[in-house]
Amino acid sequence: MEAWVVGGTSGIGAAIVEGLQERGIQPLVISNDARVGQQLGQKGIVFECMDLSASGVEIAQQTISLLGQYGLPTYLFMSAGLTREQAATETSPEDWLTLANVNLLSVAQMCNVVTKAWLNERDFEAWRRHVVILGSVNAMRPLSSQGAYSVMKAGLHAYAKCLSNDVAGGKIRVNVVAPGAIWTPMNESLFLNDIDGSEKRRVIESSLIERWGHAREIGDVALWVALDSPEFLTGSELVVDGGHVVKR
Image 1 (tube, rainbow, N blue to C red):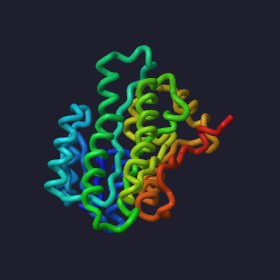
Image 2: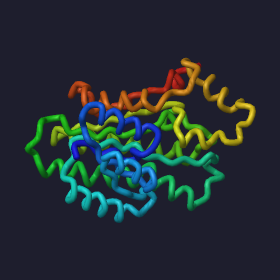
Image 3: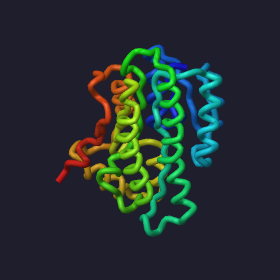
Image 4: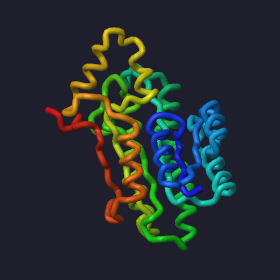
């Protein structure tokens, strides 16, 4: 499988899968959503179930197994994510651990395993192999209402910069795409009690482009980074947030 999409059953990950198919690239979709995975299988899309809340040892072992089964990908898209609408001080130890595993530690384990395999097999086009990590503007402008999630995304951005240095000698690229407020099932779930829509309007008004972003907009950027961007682009954070971070 030329491209692996972790978190490819929903939101931005699903948009990346759709875009890859349009480009004639068959993805391996990795997610914990077995129900959607079964639906993808009926459409001829290869799916593997993985729970990123598992321990790092388990994630590393499962990733090694996938490499043995499917071979080395050319592109690795890390799009899985999980949030809790809680201040950092109100987040339970259990939730801290779950958010750390899903948003940071499992991502690092998967990327470590894949990039080490790439480094051990040097017979490939220079700078073509690429890790694209979906971060968040919360890493740059933390939301107090999603404190632990913001912390993990900040750590993820730092990890991506470290990884880009670690693999540059093997002519491998690593970049982060940092979305703003995107209307995905994960974000939609945060507004179930927003009966009058005031919270949704507050989010919209926090950006220069006063609307929610679409998953496909972010997916298209991630695909451009992986497939079409110049090789001089690596170790970067591409912010796609409608002007949220810069708005005064």
